[in-house]
Amino acid sequence: MSLDEITSRIAASATSHGRDPADITLIAVSKVQPPERVRAVLDQGHRIYGENRVQEAQGRWPAFQEAYDNIDLHLIGPLQTNKARQAVEMFSTIHTVDRPKLATTLARLAQERGESPEVFVQVNTGEEPQKAGCLPSEADAFIAEVRALDLPLKGLMCIPPIEEEPSLHFALLAKIAARNGLAGLSMGMSSDFETAIGQGATHIRVGSAIFGERDYG
Ligand SMILES: *Cc1c(COP(=O)(O)O)cnc(C)c1O
Image (tube, rainbow, N blue to C red; front, side, top):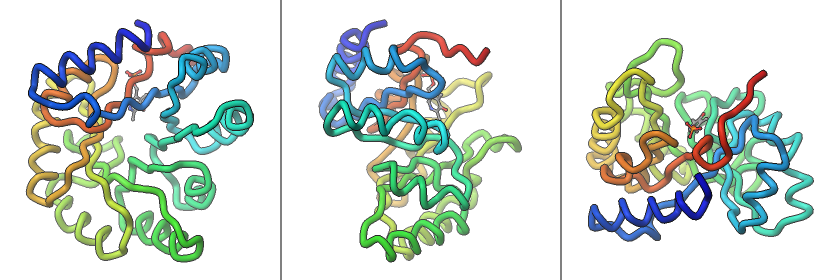
């Protein structure tokens, strides 16, 4: 699917749900994609990209940043505390804040640098043991903790279990966000971004639908 097609599908689903398409940020998830595919999307004018590993992002984005203005990078994968400093230097937004130690480290870096990336709290809505994110039952307390640390908290993020109906997870995330007065919802990927938009997504993370299948080989 082309970027144009995705953009018109976003607009159509926003409009059909009485939403303004301008309220939805498309994060083009470029992880693992070969540089020429990323360059093609940069050449079409898109500037907001998601990566899930700090190291991979560090390897490829400085060269693109030399060549293109106003690139906006979002971290959408798990962040180890010992990579936090590199992450805040590179990303405008971190979608995966999920534990007190990481939040505290980010707050300390923000103090030191006088600026902070925007953050989302990741919620493990499916309570999957292998998946990052705080548990739904711990979310309210953790959100309060992040706020007390003065981090610029935009909202919540989730990755629904692959084999489950995503809308149940989007609804749960939206409910936790609403009761905490948070407007941002980072949810929806290639296969379900329209559903997510219908349920209030403000940030959708779309990879393979834009770039093609990832080749992990
Ligand atoms: C890879 C990834 C995506 C994009 O997935 P697609 O199915 O290729 O759109 C979105 N969010 C996260 C957290 C990811 O790791």
